[in-house]
Amino acid sequence: MTYHIFGYEVELAETRIAESQSTVREQLAAYERGDRRRFDLEITLPDGFTGEVHTALQAIPYGETRTYGQVAERVGTAPIAVGQACARNPLPLVVPCHRVVGSDSLRGYMYPGLQERLLELERAHVVE
Image (tube, rainbow, N blue to C red; front, side, top):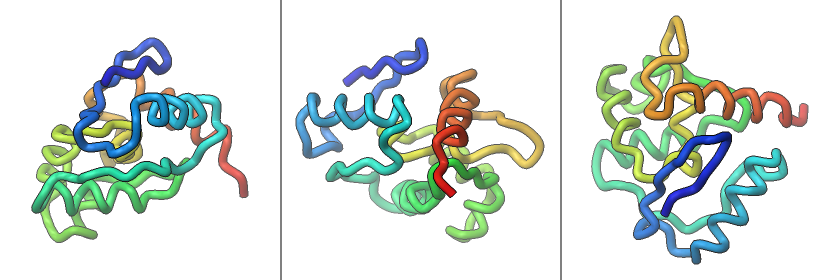
């Protein structure tokens, strides 16, 4: 399914989400408004290493970032492998690969420009 956010078309693999498209769209819209910090969706992550990385991404708190190196250390691999797993993310936004950044810049995200917008959105709605 395609979801439009901040002028970008984001593709989500609907076969990996148990809920209806309308439920997914409602939750994505609430996220976009800053009203939702976590998605309440039953999802199927990829198997193996990529699934391990995606599980680690889901543990990154809303409004925070981790470097590729930090995620790599958590799952016991190299930063480049984390980047490759992020590039194979079938559920962008739901599995927050936008929260993974380079050690010196925001680079590598599959939707250039969107990463910055998503991080700004989250930082603006963090409740401390």
